[in-house]
Image 1 (cartoon, rainbow, N blue to C red):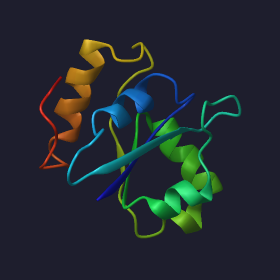
Image 2: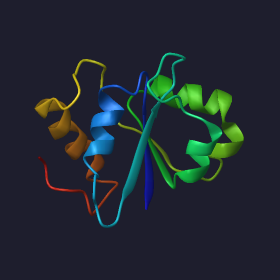
Image 3: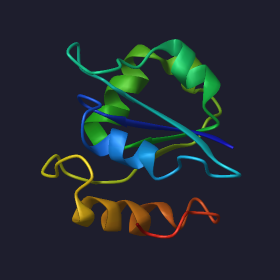
Image 4: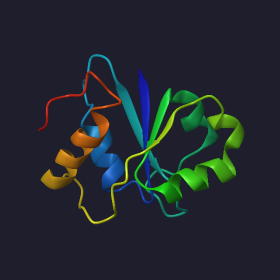
Length: 112
């Protein structure tokens, strides 16, 4: 399954989430950001590739719906409600990601 994680800058939250799935046998993960200065900025191609899209905050979902309504049609868009207060790889961020993702991804990797 191809999953996409979205935050603002693609430096901390979404990049940490993507890393949870490195070498996972079932999930392939990518990440991107919604803002102009993002490390990797989300494109229609990202959304076309993804089977499920996870955003960290409601505003990310709103931005995607404004700009990519057609590409989102028929795809699950899940808001994780994870605030922008964690650094890349933060253990609290990883624990929160695992908690919020587990209802949606049954083959979630064990917490690092």
